[in-house]
Length: 192
Image (cartoon, rainbow, N blue to C red; front, side, top):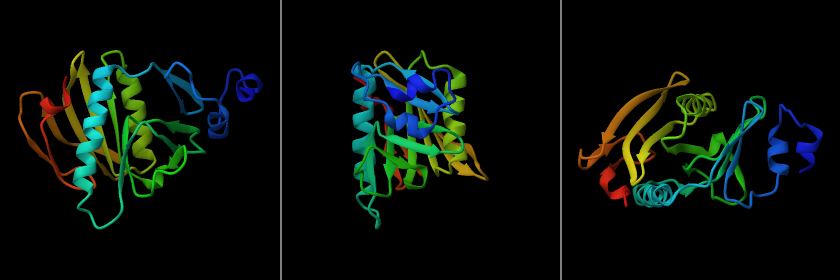
């Protein structure tokens, strides 16, 4: 809490972000270009989809020669100079998930599950921040009250994300290459 008292209006640093206590209400506090971004606790359908995506990624990366780890809701430091640290809904790391947060250089894929309340600007800001940090793949998942309705995968190309695969509810299983390991995904399996 000291960080908030000393710097009431910001900009804040990644050290300030680390100094904050865990939020008792389950909301997530992220740092975007030095300013706080608070997101409410995830809904049940969001949590279910996140769990299913982490399990799917776990199965896909199990066959890779390098040790990779799919985890949900973990801190990622995107750069001290950018003063940005986010908590993507799911990531694939190339290092064991020991600790509270990880540098972007260890993130092979980051993904967000957006609720209808997430603004287009918030979505673009997070996508841009992950691209600037050099994360090779990003997944953007749109959802309604029962879970995901669309997935768009992105591949890093020249420092910017290029949309690659778009999967909509009802498409059935689709092959996805924009991941540390290729996989098949049917959005219907992510819904309650």
